Image (cartoon, rainbow over all chains, first blue to last red):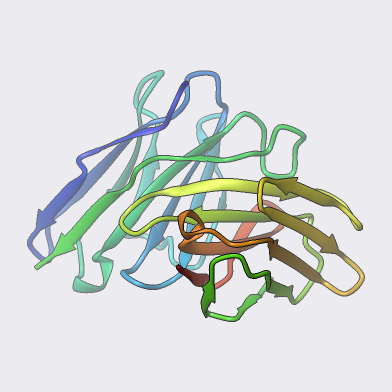
Length: 117
Length: 109
């Protein structure tokens, strides 16, 4: 069964450093998402991406964040200058259609745990 | 801004019992999602509810949606230990998905 994969599973970085989290969505999916979950808290939407551009973003997704689909398979989240409060689990998800579309089920990857020291 | 509230946040129940988790949302939501998350794991999609009166069932879980009341419920029938997990509901407004705080369910023998 196709699945969303994410690498690395755990990333440790120093405050102020740049990190890139990588995701490979399901191959025929067209919409891609990033979410984060601070330990023990709820899941928070960061951004959705379609047709090589951001379609929605939350207030959390500020100028420190960027997303890219550098090739036909990867979808990346970059945090330019990490802060302590960026420590969280980051989930990538993909769906065939947009969330308001018919085939709107999202499939989530296993997550990348980011620890900022 | 869409706000989603779940209750209870913690639920401990005996095997074989029934219970309902409630999910209220503040403004119009295009649809309502339920997810399951096991500790340290990712989110597993359980249900997508598309319209008023929608009811979906999978095994011991049944979800419903009342858009007039802005309420979705996740009903657990005859709970078993394997259902122990955190359950999240999420609403959608213009492609902006908002999650509830989650209900941590523990099913005891």
